[in-house]
Image 1: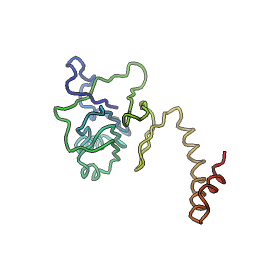
Image 2: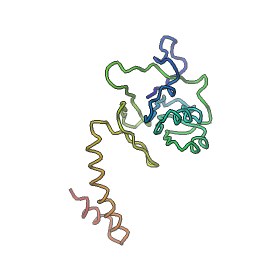
Image 3: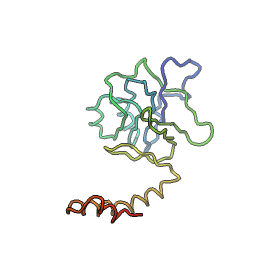
Length: 178
């Protein structure tokens, strides 16, 4: 996980890393990057995503902007972001100080002024599709999987009834009443 900070932060607050964070990415990881909401430049581009893929990343979630969309799509690496920018990071932002003192590393992600902050911790499961991104805490993963297994057939029955002409309210009452 990477927290991006403004370049104006003091030299005493340099990141606690010996190399670039993408070169330290473990195989099978999802790279999570969070940037300040007033950061208008991209925090992920084709080169960074390309290196992440070579390192074996399973995807990238950017609470910030991305660029180089054609390159990102060509890589085939799932990338989800808050927005787009054609401006890179050079001289604008850098990784902020980040070290897990006790236990796994974590960052707080907020997708807007009115959004609820979400704590993403190493070991959590990230699920993403065209609808958005979810973080499932490791302690809750088994229960979430079970609830999904239970709800999927219910959703399928609702859709079948709705497509067969049944009313929306009655269909939901029939299958989702609880």
